[in-house]
Length: 273
Image (cartoon, rainbow, N blue to C red; front, top):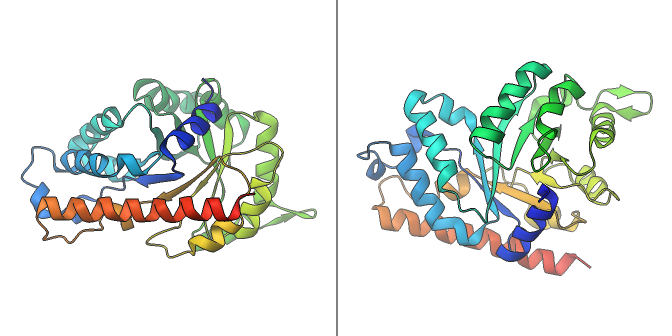
């Protein structure tokens, strides 16, 4: 099954366009989890159990796991295995290297760990992306219009009458219309509206709701296809207080995921024709 079909099926079945970002910062894990053999893994397993019925999937940011050494990599592998099969698994790797190296990244994350999709920087061009889309059931979210301040350094540079990010977005669809989507920050409403209106029905991965404080209703007014995923990380997984007992902490996590999903779902019904 191609990713776009799988994504559509899961969004409908889960009644959710939310992905929970497992940005598991060891220093922020509540002390109640730190007596476990692998605190990052124990924390993630509990977060998945508390949130899986309110989301369409999970986005795992590799940086948090790589920084934690062996225990982090163990937590990464076991966390991916623990995500239910009927939920999307996004590898937030932001890789972007020459084709021969990209092939090994594809083997590591798409083949060995069986992620459904991966985030990739397109700066080095087609050969840095092609190994990922050679896996016909996998998907690439290209960094197109990101929410960080430094994005303006390059993404909005003009070439002719087009900005660089727009050139990247258009060019990428010539590589594949079924296996490429875009990462666009929730603060870039004009671009979200434009690309979600595209005839290509391009899936969007949208960070920036939650701790980053962008407005959910303004965002939903500008989304024009069903194949979008809104990521929220810190505001969900650290919704509880550091000194809460485990059951209380996880109840707060569950309530926050449920609340945000309900917001997205109600606004989707309100604004989608």
